[in-house]
Image (cartoon, rainbow, N blue to C red; front, top):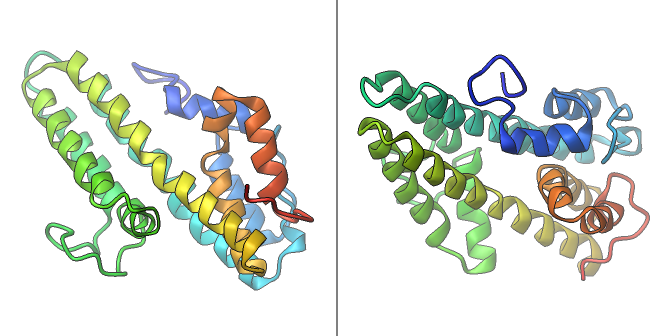
Length: 238
């Protein structure tokens, strides 16, 4: 429902991934290939999971589930809210928006997420972790939730055009922790003699953001992929 059979299809962010990977179920294919220890069958960004043991496969599966599958489902819920937004009677749109917030946050963050405990498993917790590494706290989640609240108010008011612009800001911010994760674990693999676990983390984070990079610069995406892909012989984090 992100490629066809919906009002706003094809969705912009989904098309980054569809155009890059060449399949619509790219995230599921990544995870299933990691479970099976097989080579993916993408147009770009392939991963040969037969080169991994349990440590590498674990990271590919966990991060592929949270940061590829759940990530795009969050965007799908926001886009669904925009699809059904009207000038009045937007209960359905607000419900879809709230679902997107729920899938972004998860159920382990507490009532307000104010305690940066290592409990969450989804994108909210990732943003909390990586903002510590890059000194971007509390801008990421706090700023994002301000925009989420604004988008909800715009939907409730029937201001669909404004809600769409707010959604663009939200999705752009959601890529930041993924980029930070790629950079962190590329550094671990390159400078800190990281093992299979760290290399797999770099590969998985990169897989979640390479299509967006590719849309801006195919050369940059190729450079990143060559350095952190599954089974890369060498990683240059600079």
